[in-house]
Image (tube, rainbow, N blue to C red; front, side):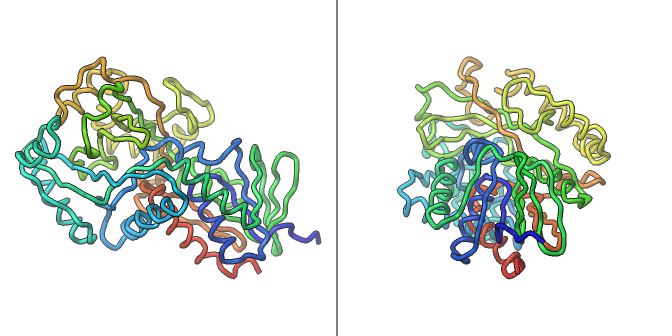
Length: 401
């Protein structure tokens, strides 16, 4: 039998895949490790289409992997940025309550922060106005540890460190077939067949399809959700000094439209959350027949739509009607006008959905004797990429023998 060319092969050049590749190489310097990415560079999908926030872990259930990884990841991300001289800012975040009902939700959220050992301050309406003169609200939670960074640059620095240690990377390398025997996994890529003793898939939006290639029947499907953004004019670059978030509805899976200071000095507005009909469609109008059929033929899709019908219709309306989107922001920033919302690229969130319509809110993995698949790496996966990579390494350590 032909000998495996690599000890570890990773699919996916997003921040989670590159972080894992680097940490594997650090643990096993003599191992032969190959990273495959179907695009021409790293971070072209979820990594490069997000808000760039270093999250503190406000929203996540105490004791969950999300809460743990976010807390550890925020500190690890800052340390990595300092070591590699990547610009970042810890500007803090304000979660603003604009109604009596949201005050009650704010208090519950503050208690969750306490359970997750996150330092916060509760601000009255007057204290909020003093901190952010352009923001209106009845009160707010201030989270000083929240920051901003360019995750594309972070991923590029991770890759540079990986290749500097002798790791190999191939771009424009889409995987088209996989097969596994007792000794190795064979990966078909660009007409070439590559054998590896162990495979790690961090394929994000294509996670379920990689499983199917290997003959594993997934018990979930990736449903893409578009997060649509706008950008404010340059004259508004100093409209806020914090990130400004609404108090989220606990019955909904997304955080609501917020004002985000970007590391380049600009300010974005968003995202909303609408069903995507193309897994990698970032323009205004996007459609893929295959991706749409994957949605429409999956029972879990219809159950999610039924459960979230009212909110889903509201998100769709605001996607099509810019003024409705604006009103979400004007709840806490009333001075903004319709002409202030300028075009900005959308992002796509890879949401794992179970057949019963349940949204997977925490990390989800699948395995075969010689593979490990990251099936769901929910937000804030970018913040948490370093501890996620370490966790994956722990899971695969010694399994490539």
